[in-house]
Length: 210
Image (cartoon, rainbow, N blue to C red; front, side, top):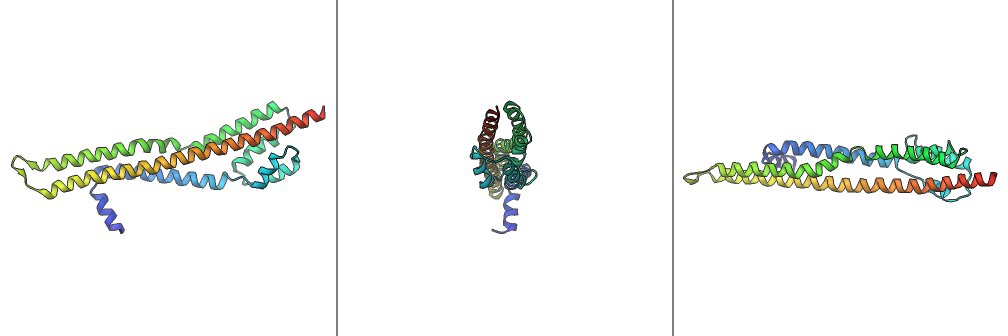
């Protein structure tokens, strides 16, 4: 199927195709943005993970490992909040790390509401296109019966194209929303787990210094 065939099929969908294409474009931009966001800023090296999971890690080595991450990396920002305050009381460190985690969570979830909106709106717009198509199909059936069969089939085609495109866009948006919602939750859970390990290390240091 080439581009011309696709254009012809979309042309059958009538006016409902335009808002559906706009929703599809917005959905694509958001999904690509989330993919790039996690690929660039959501990576945690195994060496740093293993280091934090060891209660006896060295803070200088920890700082060096964190410093090798990209400046906007989520883990770097989170662990930097812990390292920069690791000489303060543990409750203080927890508060600063929690604040940074909330900022990171807000950034990761930005735009997901739009995907959720696409999931709801696309099938409804497709349904509207279906109704318009069927109305156009029945309009050509006059008092004398069916006079222009090709116009009836055109209206039915319009209805089917709008419905199919609306459902396709909604399904892709649903999969994207569920995947990145789960990915964000997993990243935050791991961040919380490793942050707890680091703060436990701070408590051990403070107990040992007494």
